[in-house]
Image 1 (cartoon, helix red, strand yellow):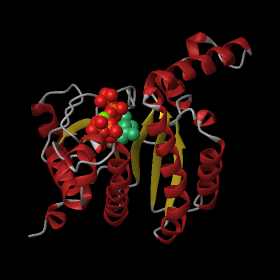
Image 2 (cartoon, helix red, strand yellow; image 1 turned 180 degrees about the vertical axis):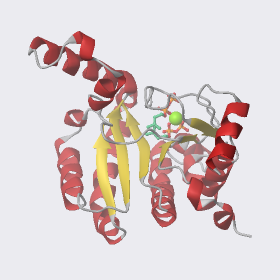
Image 3 (spheres, helix red, strand yellow; image 1 turned 180 degrees about the horizontal axis):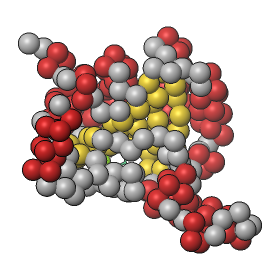
Length: 253
Ligand code: IPE
Ligand code: IPE
Ligand code: MG
């Protein structure tokens, strides 16, 4: 039986987030400069986007560039931005053919102009697609996002459109870049690193975390299916006991 067929489509995560890590190490293993790893990571992006759409995963968020990544050597940053512009413009047609909507989260104003324009263009051209939403986290960090949300909320209080006693988790959610997007049930990180690296700190509060040794350019559809199958074998308790959950399941039957 193929891995894909083992997936229970009734229990499919609605939203999967991925920290695509290990491009530099992959390139080193191949005796090539780091950018070679980034270029080869594009194929993995295509594979997971296609796999997510085929399965019916509604949201796929890919961490493509963090706020902290601006501190990398200048030539790597420039090459990454060029790769981004090129890939986005080359893939827009395929996104439309597969009914995939593109969105982006992060400090998009900090992107180089051509990159920002290309991104904006692709978001516009794909905005009516409803099969799967691909969210690119670009110049993104969670602390930046949360700080931004706090500033927005403070402004609403200053403007007297909100009072401090009205602040709820829903209000916080509404002021994050991910407003309107459900929380990821599953977060995957490649390359064997066991950390979050400033990614979706608020949104991952109850996500299942999956770590694999595979370096991002080696990540294929089957690796994606494996992560989903692993997720489907877990018990999500949200603070309750296993017995409580089983009782509820029995009652629901
Ligand atoms: C992930 O791969 C891509 C980005 C962060 C842009 P890395 O470039 O971090 O690869 P490693 O971790 O150095 O191997
Ligand atoms: C996280 O990877 C950011 C992206 C994948 C875009 P990094 O390689 O930048 O993370 P650290 O530095 O190892 O934590
Ligand atoms: Mg890395």
